[in-house]
Length: 262
Image (cartoon, rainbow, N blue to C red; front, side, top):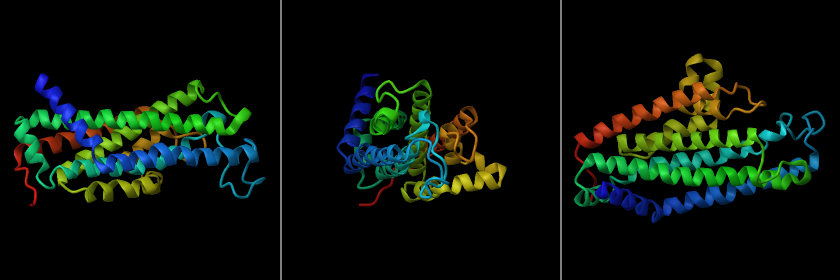
C-alpha cells in the first residue's frame, strides 16, 4: 500500500510538472469564467426575458435563471478531452514509461496509479472551473442573478452533472490514448462529437444517443436544449464506455511491451 501511494504521488507530480497541465488550467480556469462573465453582462443588459424576437442576436430565448452559465461550461470540455488524450499517449514517448516501471515494477499498480492521479486532477480542475463559471455568471448578472456562492438546488445539481461529464470524458480520452499509444485517435473520435456531431447523430438515429459525448449531454441537458435531460441513461452509457475502454487499455498495457522511440 505504501509503494502504491508513492506511485500515485509520483504520477501526480508528473502531471503537475507538465506543460500541458498548466496550459489546460489557463484555458479552463481563466478563459472559461471570463467568457461566462462577458455573456452574463450582455444578458443583464438585454434582460432575462429576452427572446429571439425582441433581440435578433439571440438564436433562442434565454434559459431559466437556474440554468444560466451552463452553456459556457461546454467550452472547457474540449481542452479536458485533449488533456486526457495527450496524457494517455505521452507515457510512451521518450521512454518515460520505462523509467516509471524501473521505480514500480507492478504494471497493475502503475496503471491504477495513473487512473487515480488523473481522477484526482480532473476532479479538482473540473469542480473549481465549473463552480467558478456559474458563480461568476450570476455575479455578472448582479441583482438579476442568484447568490454567487449559495446559488440554487438546481444549479448545484447541474454543477455536479457537469463535473461528472468532464471527469468521465477525460478518463475515456486517456484510456483511448493509452490503448492506441497515440493522442490523435481519442481526439479524432471525441472532438467531432463535442462540436455537435454527437447531438446530430443522436437526433437523426437512435443509436447516436449511445455515443459517449451524446450520452454525456444527456447528463447536462437544460430546458432550452433540443434533447431531454436523462442523467440516469446518460451516466450509465458514459460509464460503460469508460469501463470498457479502461479494461481494454489495461489488458493491452500489462500484456504488451511498453515500446517507445528513442
